[in-house]
Length: 278
Image (cartoon, rainbow, N blue to C red):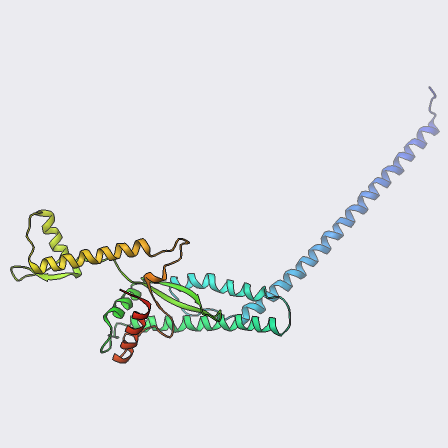
């Protein structure tokens, strides 16, 4: 086995040092290249984010936003509606006249929708004013629906007409759970009573004989309860959406005012008969 002299050992160390230097330099260059690439990508990402933010702001500026303290029903509806319309706008392809018209139709439809929301909400607030009373000839069924709206018993639904234009609607349940206290009568002794009182008597004495007036009120209450339970069973479609046949719809044009005169009340009845068959 050949021996190594000091000169040979020195040459080996020098060669190893040079190779190590090359390896370090190579790693250093690779690291610098990767670092430069990352910096470049970050810069591009920042530029792209800035472009996206600018595009988003431009889109947001085109779409009217809700104003005022709307009810939860309206805010929940708009939380789905507005982003959906903005996505439609952003996803329109092309830059020609057809594409521009499509985008303009989306913007106009959305802004008209917001105007309808503002109009309906203003009417809801006007009707809720305690100083406002039902006008002459006001339809009792309409009064019931307005009472339900005052009690927050409604939903806000988006519909689209044949042109694809969106419209905001207040959907009011056709039936409410009956209250026994509201079904009144005069008993055999001439005293005023209601179905809640009558039920208490029947619970205490199952053999209690009802007067004709008591029987009529009791039957009317039970009939109303059957209708309400039927409404509950059919108020939703299989996909979870509300069943339009089980609600009275009002948009900003048809929404009734409590101070309506007999002419408008007649129009309200016609709207009701057109939409609901009882």
